[in-house]
Image (cartoon, rainbow, N blue to C red):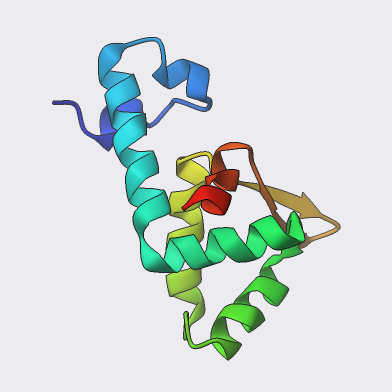
Length: 109
C-alpha cells in the first residue's frame, strides 16, 4: 500500500481521485482527521465561525483546555488542511482558517 510520500505532490481531491490507491489514502486520511477528538473540536469551532484567525482559534482551544501549546495546534491544523477539511488563508500577514465542504461533516457527527 502506498504511503503519504507517494502523494506528496497532490494538491487537490481530484489528484487523489485519479487512482484507487489515492482515493483509499485520502479516505483514510479524512477519517483520521474527523474522528480525532482534538481535530473534531477544531472543526466545530471553525465551522461555527466559518472563518477564524489562528490566534483566536488558539485562545478558544486553550481556554477550553483542548490544546495547551501552539505546536499541537499546528500539527492538528496541518492534518486538517491535508485532509481538505479546512483551508488556510493568509491575509495581511495573519493566518486564518476557513471551513470547507468536507469539514462541515462535523455537523453530522
